[in-house]
Image (cartoon, rainbow, N blue to C red):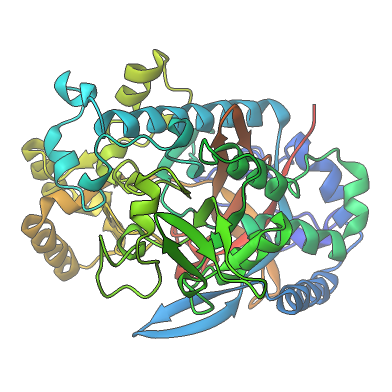
Length: 490
């Protein structure tokens, strides 16, 4: 159905609204939602040609800042500018309060869960979470048993992925507490939009997103080893060829701390040191952006050249803090996600603020039977993949592809979950190839920090956009882009 806004908003003259989808800008009666009325009035002075020019300006801004990511295809890496849309997503203050409370609740519950499964295992003993899910997880580290990180914090940095469904409610898609990425694009999006359309910021009271790095540093310093007064913090990166290297360098620069690779560090007598032109300097807190398996070749992957020999021993000795703690990946396993409502109730004695998407786990016989009979109505996800890889959307598959998916699932049921095909909300997005604004599916990744007496949720998050028409996968590695996300002040 085509909506004619030619008289007041020329840029939406060809906007096509699918009535089956929840449009965040236009309601079911084709009226502009009140929160967007002001910005549409402001944008009415622009033609679609103006937006084409502004889009080029934004792309140039991203290129000049080095805001890029890498996509891996056929074992080849290709560096791309992170796609950015000029039409912001707006979230009401009251709506954001619910989201912030909900994601903080989940992060606290997951932190309690991690301590428990590496110590008393009460949640297993009480029959809430099956022991098989823990022991069979590739991210569960026996080396962490009975060890407590400083201040009992495991998931210092968390990313929570949410969608708004066709019923207008938010649902959590997944929790990310290994190395959640994307926060640098939140700040980059805000800066790019200010450069391109600074005037629109004069008409809204918007929460700040540029304070993330100072809060990150405060959090890192708060979880220093107990014997340290003034900690030295660093960010450990795999190097320039990592897909998130821009983010690593951005966070180091804006936090005022060193960006190091494994070769820049060494361990002596269970203390970690950084090589400098002035000689060795002790390191107390490491925000590591490398996976568990590569932390220390003496303990994990012996062929790793990304980590530091002896680093895990220094960690267990209490002489250095690693953020996030090794072994946190067992808690963002998508199989554990199934139990999140029970986990929240068990540890916090609270009802979940945010809903889970109903999830079936292939290791359960009844669930497996249902999944195999209804793949065409489900999304199949591997429990341990990230970046949108390995996902199969049932109604997009041919009969032959469905049979292949069934075979893969039956070979390794523990590795897969299934969820209903959720109707992600859509948002008006400038599509460069068509030189027009069109509906595209969006989600939201929030960023939470936990430290000693420190709780912080970035008031904005990363709105990711599935730029391909009809696509539900928003990850940049799968061709997605992003928007600036405005959280309004009260």
